[in-house]
Length: 282
Picture 1: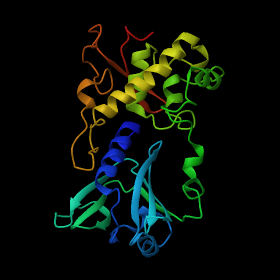
Picture 2: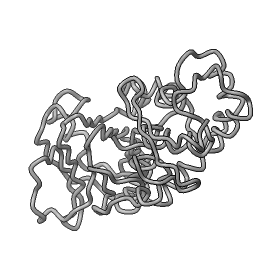
Picture 3: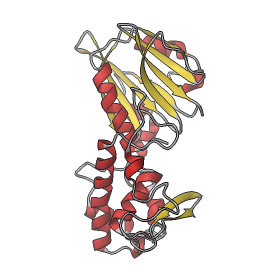
């Protein structure tokens, strides 16, 4: 599943190509992709002739602010890519892949194409009379953004000191911090020198401080690298992310640690893989 850096990479790309562009129409090829309104016909009707003001990100959700006539609010367009979703900016003449689910048409024969092999991805139109979280209920459950002032060492201490769960598992909890997934949890734990199975309650203040810094460092580096591509992720221009080539531990089982040359190990925690260096992480 795309994590915060991948979704942020897509957001940046969408702002480059769709800001100020009018949606002239569209096509829904898989009705269950549309989560709201229930009718795909109504979804397309509400989007026709609206202009995309700009794109925002909350956790792993994308939200486009919509306007009409430059001033009137026209609601929001919400997207969650889930496991295999892709948003591509293409010419309408380009061949349509098998797993195309939604097409939104723009001027100059361009389109925004939503492709999703596993079909878990969702799209929403949110009326201007509603806040996005009243329609996309998952937004209500998100913790703070890692780059926000709310996310800090003090915040993590308050949330972790009593928890009887592994720190890797805690980092995957979107109510703790929004946007972190398997890849960047492993990477942040490596940089902070913490084993993924360490219980939250056993972490010291210095470890939590290192972790809060490492989370931001890892996410910033991944955004600069255009995200990580292991299977499905590509940006809106169809280009792979580059973070995989510089990852510290994720996806590097058996390869030498970039710091001490000890082979990277892989284990499982609550059904999720965890990669770590047994020497650098204690």
